[in-house]
Amino acid sequence: MNAPNDTPVRDLLVVGAGLAGIYAMYRALEKGLDVVGVEAGESVGGTWYWNRYPGARCDVESVDYSYSFDRQLEKDWRWTERFATQPEIRSYLDHVADRYDLRRHFTFGRRVTAARFDEQASTWTLTLDDGAQHRARFVMMATGCLSAPHRPDLPGIDDFAGTQLFTAQWPDEPVDLTGKRVGLIGTGSSGIQAAPLLAEQAQSLTVFQRSANYTVPARNRPLTEEEQQEIQATYPQRREASRYAPAGSLSTTHPQKATEVSAEERARAFEARWQEGGVLFAKTFPDQGTDLVANDYAREFAEAKIRAIVADPQVAEDLIPTDHPIGTKRIVTDTGYYEMYNRDDVQLVNLRREPIEQVTAWGIKTSTAAYELDVLVFATGFDALTGALTSIDLRGARGAVLADEWADGPTTYLGLGVAGFPNLITLNGPGSPSVLANMSTHTEQQVDWGMDLVTYCLENGIDQAEPRRDAAEKWTEHLGEVAEGTLFTRAASWYMGANVEGKKRTFMPYIGGFGNYRRLCDEARDTGYAGYVLT
Ligand code: N01
Image (cartoon, rainbow, N blue to C red):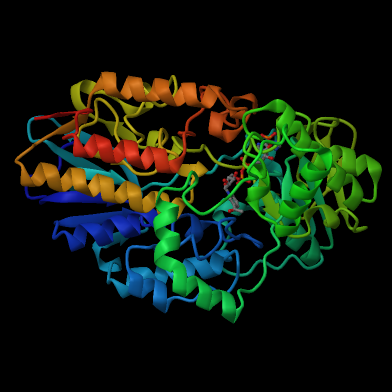
């Protein structure tokens, strides 16, 4: 694959125009780089462009899930709710792209299919799905952590005569489910968020659940005027604290361990978090993620809630997870999910008891029953963290092929670079805290670090910056050790790659805390990029 000689060699190519790609483009232009971007969607937004299913909403508070790089942007944008909806986040990202005039630097509606590094010329050539090519010295992959949808290969799936919908690729135009018998496969964050709204619209909803998940009430609400003013008054301090917080936004845990306090105090603390709503229930006590006894206290509390809310005892039991400590799969936040099962027009099918045998023209046949459906909604997740990168034919130096390099699990240097792939920066990649942190704080850190590396090389006549293999192996080993010190490796989660058949099971994000990670990245930069071979 050789680009024609007249293809200009840019300083930088940005792949993706989601949260990370938008900010990477902003920073590159601010630094005066010659930069272009490519985005598969028809507009900016990434995750928030594609995931338009009913109920899609962020589980990080809106005032934190936003850029902090421009104080005036913060002052001008007003979030309306505690947790923003997909349309509100999408219009925020549209606003940012327009405000800084970023769109014209992207090619939209084109997917990068291949990337080759030319060692002699020290340039990358990227090929798009229409055959067009771009060349650049550096590439930033802002391709997302949860952007390669995972479609289950169910027998007979193509025979279904009704409508198939995917939460991760929901149509832009409204979908009318009135009078429809809807089936939903998948009970992760997407399925659990969508289900109550699907139930409201449809004639009936049948939820096909393979694994139950823990979910806590989001308790979303409009932000009051007083809160708006308080946020504005303290925004800079809030942001600064978030930059060094364990998960990239403010959170506190109980000052004592769950195992150290009385049963009454535990119940009080869990109840307070349950009423407060949101993902921080999983961090009520500091030892919940590391000590099974502490975790059991949280788990039992949540399970009692499920039994109290769901009227049918068998349905309640089916909704209680049996296969992982609470919080070791991404805890879900919902609005009315358990309550939904008290409706007469909603039923739960426990696929562990009656597995799907066949999708037919009229619906789904399990081992014990037949379910007639007009619409089948798939909320079946993603080939997380690595899928968006390994689906590109990405070839680096000395014949390195990314999909092969990562066949045994991703090895990265700080999640930001891969040995064998010079001048390639993987933003929010495996090996960084990524999905365990507030993605907007994390994204700014990643882009800033990557941009520092690019400008350092350009300003110092460095042609190639390639992570040292020993540094990458050491980082990946450290990452594994930190994960082993937690309960997270006990869950067959997408963090572990367990949801994709044949994918190596290994804990992919860095769980040592975002603040610690930032300090390690800063140190790596400030000591002259010792983890890189610079030539
Ligand atoms: O995907 P998932 P998601 N037959 O992988 C099931 C973020 N997010 O899109 O567990 C039957 O969690 C699968 O079952 P099992 C958030 O980080 C955030 O919901 O493999 N079922 C599972 O139930 C989240 O964690 C927000 O047994 C099949 C489901 O599909 C991440 O994205 C909102 C199946 C997939 O769940 C991913 O969430 C949405 C099959 N063949 C997403 N294959 C918020 O901010 C898969 N499943 C709130």
